[in-house]
Every structure is written in structure tokens, then in C-alpha cells.
Amino acid sequence: MSKIKAHLDNIVLSHTVFALPFAYIGAILAAGSIPAARDLFWITLAMVGARSAAMALNNFIDLKYDRLQPRFANRPMVTGAVKPRGAVLMTLASFALFAVAAANLHPLCLKLAPLAVIPLSIYPYMKRFSWTCHLVLGLALSVAPIGAWVAIRGDITLPIVLLGLAVGVWIAGFDAIYGCQDLEFDKKHGLHSMPVRFGIQGTLTISKALHVISITGFVAVGILMNMHGAYYGGVVLAASVLIYQHSIVSPTDFRQVTQAYFMRNGLVSIALLVFTVISIIV
Image (tube, rainbow, N blue to C red; front, side, top):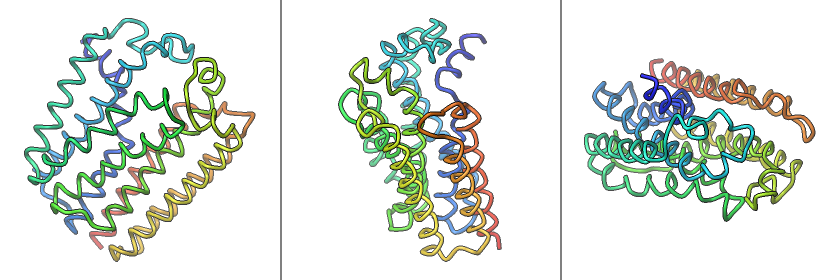
């Protein structure tokens, strides 16, 4: 049990809450109603598999740097609770789960699965080469609603592309803020990020711009899908949380960038899902 817990901590399974609700939103919009339980089951397994593989792979590849970062001293791979071999096996098993789940959804899902794996696999290396690492992370998570839409309808249209964009820049903006804490560490070890490239103030400005694009995207999806007014209640809530999140950080103060800071985003994604369901039912 302790080994299982260590692996679950290593992939931070609880953070699945960030992307899973967006996958459900994509599925609901595609179906125009609550999708069949079977489809939701396999969509959930696909999401858990893909995200677990990405996290295990990221922690395996970044272990060299995580061991040098005091903030990561308690991570399971740093403490030795999870061995590199175990992380590799977890990655392979999780990708296998993702493939099995994709095979049980619309046939197009399995055909497109390799494309979904690409950003998940290259993200861990991006900080070694480019400040766009945050955008690649956003791209990886934008697959959640798009993949769920494809799972139901078997096509890709403008509304779901916009939803994927909104989710992607949402996550990229917050990852950039998170990266501000590592500015000196990244500079010392030759790593790349928005803060290294544009400075703290520039990064916070870019993050705000990304979040404006995100909210605009959510609104555009509502218009294109002819959503009920209840849906926009969720968008207003999301915008309010974004404004608050930005108000409690500054170029000289990141004390509020804690676990709770990011879990609020997970709660917002759940709220958006709830308002979407209400809109569909109404």
C-alpha cells in the first residue's frame, strides 16, 4: 500500500481535477446532452491514463533537476520512495491504459492517439530548449476537451478547437506564474522559461493576456454552441477567480502561490462543468 501511495503521490492523481472536468464539458457539448455512461467511463480512463503517464514521465526525466531544487525535496522520486524503474513502468502502464480506452471510443480516437501523446512526451524536455514550455503544457491539456469531443462525434469543429484553446492558455498562464518562483534556479542551471526570457513583470503581463484569451474563448464557445445563459454564469465565476488569483501575486511576492492557489483552478473547472450541465438541461 505504501508503494501504491508513493506512485499516486508521484503523479499527483488529485490534480486530475484540473483537466477532467474540461473533458466532460467537451463530451457534453458534443452530445448535446449527458453522454452515455459507457462513453464517460472510457473518457475518464483515457484522461487518467494520459495524465498519469505524462506526470510519471516528467518526474523521471526531471529527476536530475528535482534533486537540486529544495522545493521538491519531498517528491517521491527525490526521496527514493519511487524508483526510476518504477516510474518507467508506471509510464508504460498508463500509456497502455490510454490506448485501451481510446480503442473503446470512436475509431478516430485511436488513430489520433499518437498526436495526443506527442505534447505529453516532449513537454518534460522543453525547459532545456525554449521558454515556450508553458505553452506546450497548455497544448497537452487542451487535448482533454478536444479528445472527448472526438470520442462522441468523431470530428473536429471550430467550437471545440476554441474550447481547447481556452483550456490550453488557461493552464499555460498559471504555469508561467508558477515558473516565476524558479527564476533563479532556472538561470543557474541553464533552463528556459517565460520568467527567464521576459522577466517576472513581463511574465505576469503575458499570463494576464493569456487568461483574457481564455475567457474570450469560453464566451465564444457559448455563442457558437447557443448555450443557455446559465453557462455564462460559470464563465463569470471563472473570470472572477482569475482576477482574484492575479490580484494576490506581484513581481516581489509569490507567497500566495501555494497548493491552494492552484486547487482553486480545479474547483473552477468543476464549476464550469456544473454550469454547462445546467445549461444543457435547461
